Length: 284
Image: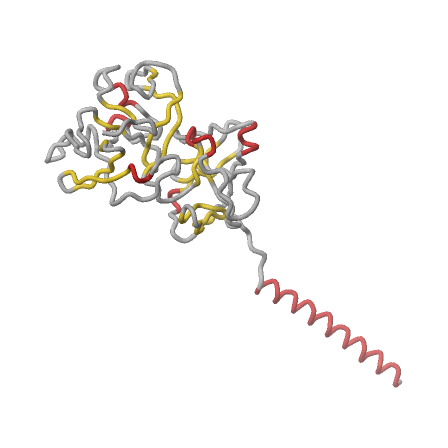
């Protein structure tokens, strides 16, 4: 009888331990879930300030040949510059969800974008915080949220559908050109003086044709360019960005479409009255 009672006791004790173990496991799972790293955040960097990284702190990049919003990095390029894509992208503090998107690549895969720029890693960044991909071949830029300008590298095509060089003459060439942070082309007016807008009327009645590029101040500039060459001027109460003394404008007939360079042939093809700007632009 005594042995039977002891058996019951040990059985009950064992059941209690099993139940307690299950309870503890359930409780632990609720308190400490495994994180799912699917996001983009702003990360402080000693060289560039706040940059875009993934949740692990690995740097993201823009490719200037993607100025139209389509990825031009495939094959060996995509091996060196792996595509960044997250299906359910989470956004860190200081970033805006509407600035992010997704594109379909030529091979059928997907890629995440920021302000229309496809996002990439760089294979030679081996640890969080590395920014080795910036300025590679003068085509790549560390991804940032506050660029006053970005830049494209592509064939210029005018409003007349003719191909042009960066000198404003007909010709086939891949040209660097300055854009705003969203990839919209910026132009200079050949009749402007140094740091002086000679085009815009006081009532801004011609601003629709050639809107001045207004900024609150000069923020971040891709390291391909010298930030000291960017300044601002006052134009009838508005602040216009200036590069090497050239006030900068958008072109209305680019229709706010990234990568369009219609202004290169306006109003007279080959006259070079309105020109793109780039790192070889001569200062006024």
